[in-house]
Length: 199
Image 1 (tube, rainbow, N blue to C red):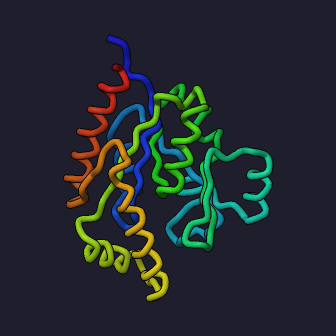
Image 2: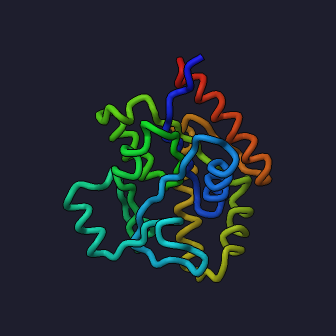
């Protein structure tokens, strides 16, 4: 039996729902998956490493890559920093490995658009939305990630409401509960997606 085709699996959802944890575990526990490292102009947090968590770029570096057409998608996030996915991070690796990444809903829209005309992406995109159990649980998770100003928390909660409104446009929705249940749901949906890809 032929191996299933490789795919780009995108996890989206509000900050604080555990997307990075799911990505990391998928890469660790499921053979054949690699994580797409996206780029950002925001400063690294104390536990983050350049090239492992993100490609941390200066504004000037980001601008140069943007002008050179090196991004598959990019966006301003929370009106303060830019995030983007380099074409090379996806298109060069997709023929050899399935890829997983987490980006915001703007990024998902841009990659969906790119997939309509980019032959290396066409028919290879699988999208999953990780929805919080409730807005109150999401607020607690965001506050538990470290010091956050009331203004920043309010901005993130407002962004979360806009993001959650788009959940039904995704191939699959994970209704977040425990980390273990979320991962089981991810594996179940990935198995369904693979069957569709083999079509």
